[in-house]
Length: 148
Image: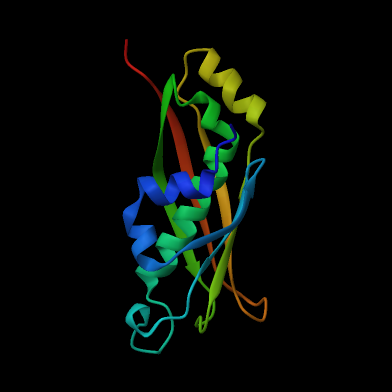
């Protein structure tokens, strides 16, 4: 049985489901998801609220991370440690987030095998329907080894 990371993330993070985030593709340290254009998600300039954009991007980063490290969940808990977001343009309409792991899986697993608590980044670009970059986010994740 294969793991549907997008479905798993939406099950684990009900708020992402509440916003209507959908996953188009997830795999090999990458994820692509969308946030619908809904009036109840808009801010004062009629675009998605910053919190909705952040949740979209953080969800994409989590899916990308899980697609690479889901097989490590038996021995470590994934946790975001920091996030930075750069709002470049006013977003309008449906937006999509494209996330990609910034480290190799082997680098991270080697550090976990060595007893360390590895940290690694996931970059996320948020684009509007025309493909214009409206925000960029980097989430730093860690895999906290389970305590004996």
